[in-house]
Image 1: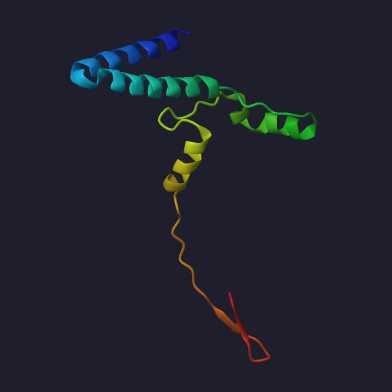
Image 2: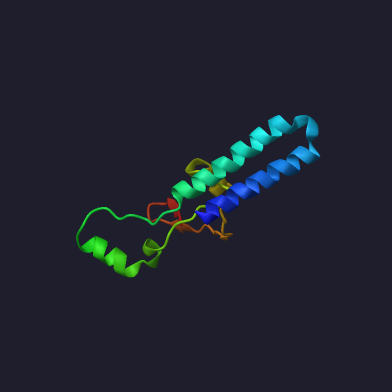
Length: 116
């Protein structure tokens, strides 16, 4: 609860600074800032939770015993809210390993060849 109050305090401070820096566009800028920060805060609060395993049985028991990540609360990145944006950003931030490939041709008894 105190974390949420601190976030709203930060939003209020940002809106006050925006009113000082951009007096002619206060209403538009305040609306955009308020919507953006409210959206980030809402998604952060809504999606911050512990993973839930469904079902019973041996597989669930093994997962609970072996995976410590299932006992921790998940917190999304505050700058990349929502699953759709996270999926798009992941494509651009993915590390692509540099693998040197070589092709080798192997002749076959019938006069053909195949590549490995």
